[in-house]
Amino acid sequence: MCGIFGIVTKNEQPLGNILAEAAQRLTYRGYDSVGAATISGAKVDLRKDVGRVKDVAVKYNFAEMSGQRGITQLRWATFGEPSQINSQPHLDSDGDLVGAHNGNVVNNVELRQQFIAEGMTVRSMNDGESCVHAVERYINRGEGFIDAIRHAYDDLQGDYSFVIGSITDDKLYAFKKGSGLVVGLGEDFSCVSSDLPSILPLTRKIMRLNDGEIITLWHDRVELHSVKDGSLIAREPELVTETMEAVQKGGFSHFMLKEVHEQSQVAREVLHMLDGSPDVASVVEKMKNARNLYFIGCGTSYHACLTGAVYFAQLAGRPVIPVLAPQFMPQYAPTVNAQDVGLFVSQSGETKDVLNALEVAEARGMTCFGLANVIGSTLTKATVCSLPLCCGYEISVPATKTFTNQVVSFLYLAYRLAGRDTKELETIPALMDKTLEMVSEQVETIAAEINSWNDLYCLGYGATYPIALEGALKLKEITYAHCEGMLSTEFKHGPLSAVTKGFPILFAAGPNDLPLLVSGLNEVTCRGARAIAIGQDDPRLHANASDVIVIPDSTPEIAALLAVLPLQLLSYHMSVLRGYDPDFPRNLSKTLTVD
Ligand code: M6R
Image (cartoon, rainbow, N blue to C red):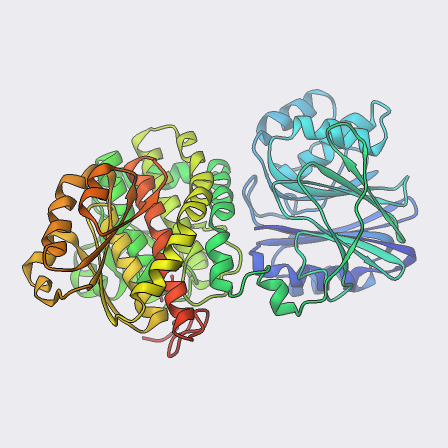
């Protein structure tokens, strides 16, 4: 979701290709537009448009751009449609300042009105432009850059980082709040970027920024100030010695574990995006008035569809038909028409089974929306409108953060449909972090204890039923054990006969379903099973389960979402204990483009 890069060199030099290459390294984050600006003397050269980096860079001849400072930005549209004018970087009113941001300024609409009322020239709808005007406002009052950024920070609400430069100054300035920002120090240059991997091909001498810090970049040094009081912050640069792969893993032993721990951050980002998205209202309206509403996906994405269907029914009273994409064709396609709406859900946006169903649905006139992570994928282009999952690159084959953001998106849409205040969902990221903190050690111990079993069950009910299916899929996918996900009430209708002493059965427990669950727990424990419950702290769970993995208190809907985290961790640890690589399980591919 958007990316920025800025560079300061000693002398004026060709910068266009450096900027295009830096932009290319940020493309994994997802984007629809790209731009570059160079500052040379009193002149800003700004070139930008909608499109792929390589196409825009060729069309606008980035190669000929030169300067002593340069900024590039990849934009994924939230405020303002994808268009040349909304692309970044942006100029201030008289073209002296140029800047770009990454993230979301949530009070962008109000700020634009203020800037216009104050006589500034506002050219776009984009919140990146608001960052530039917010600094311009205080520069016009005679403040220096550091103070202007400090005061702009008071005005700009949300999570973002930005980089800005002026024709009257040979430095660049960047600020971080909520979005990533790393500084690189090289031979006769310094640079700043949204992430570390995009800097490493240029230099391994880096400085990490914290929220609330302003960095000033010269070609041969940097200076750090606190946004709070403008005071200087002392920090030595560090040398990155790890391989690029280790850096990309961010200190975790596998991408999967890193991505599990990224879930709170990406949940925050998707909630911000949904709040600012101009598309949500029309998607919700269409869903509300649809004759039939279908949620369509495969694998993990299908489990998110099932969870979404429970949320829509329970919170908004809206019935939904969740369906595995290939089954949509024989079972529903013959009956759908233009009054129906389908939401096609896919991490990759390239799953052939999903695209096949989409093609048939569109041919029948159904309104087709998308929910996908890879922006620019076939699904996002083929649907009327596609909401992004805002997860960045998910490298590990087992889907984790994309699943939770699919579920968060469904929950958000259900709230909107029900007319409920989506602010209530802002607790989710902190609850996710708390869950990981509470369960990590215990889950690792349990993983070692049950690892010798090659047959397991994972049960749930209501909103936790699809979570149980997802937990079982994760276990199968990366431990190669057989784990069956099932509605907890179905267990007594057959599988109960499999129970022997110590047989591990996982229960994802919804806080409202405990009476039902207690029967299920006793049916298996009295036959010797090890019933491992995942749920909120409740004496009924402790009294009836063999083990209780306690997750934080929340609403029943959020509790279902949180319950998947220990299941992800359990499968991860069992996979590692078995000597497998959870990131790349045998026989599987991240993107299934075949029938
Ligand atoms: O890219 P998609 O979400 O369309 O992929 C669908 C499934 O192949 C995918 O969710 C798969 O089940 C995951 N690797 C499971 O972790």
